[in-house]
View 1 (cartoon, rainbow, N blue to C red):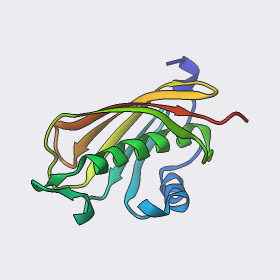
View 2 (cartoon, rainbow, N blue to C red):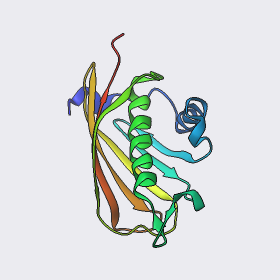
View 3 (cartoon, rainbow, N blue to C red):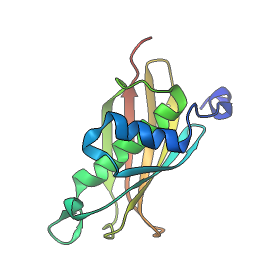
Length: 145
């Protein structure tokens, strides 16, 4: 990661990022809370409820993927501003441990921020737990100005 990226501050606050997600993604309104926006990173809580539970009494893979995708989007919007047509172009997720029926904490890092592409990773945890439940790598396309 370039030193200039580490030194850049996010262009919005955690509260502004939470409100932005609620504004542009009606399907997840009220489900995500941005806990922290820092240079090239974000920490996000996904509220877990009955919609997220799969047979076996655990959080479903699609719900965990939603947390990954949303957290990286938030980290990226924190650095480039409100660019709603920024989209996922690649994602790979590894499910590591059975999640508890608790909210999910997603820790997103941008490893490379270019003009048209951003690459990074997200690690998921059940809230209050030390063991990661999933890890993903992502690439996003940023539309040209």
